[in-house]
Length: 89
Image (cartoon, rainbow, N blue to C red; front, top):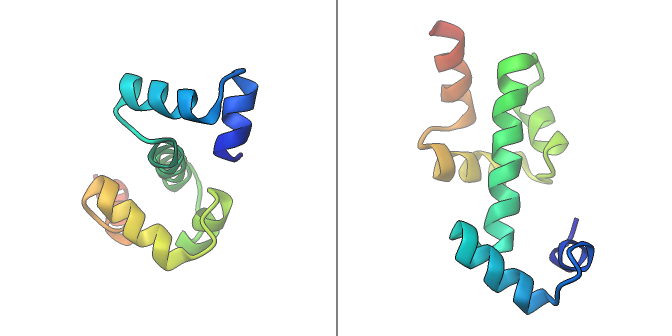
């Protein structure tokens, strides 16, 4: 979904939607979507045996390297480290 589609679904203009989301959650729409994708990736890592690349594509990332950078930015470790930590804990 695009930012415009979100705004249209909520019957808001793009700027109003942006401002309300930023005020309410402290996130821009792009940051919010990326956070949701990372949360979904974590769910997939915990409940499946997909590769990191497969999880990246399933959660809307077109580049597994960009997915890894985004994952590390949000959670402080890369996807491989995260998978190892959940398997050994």
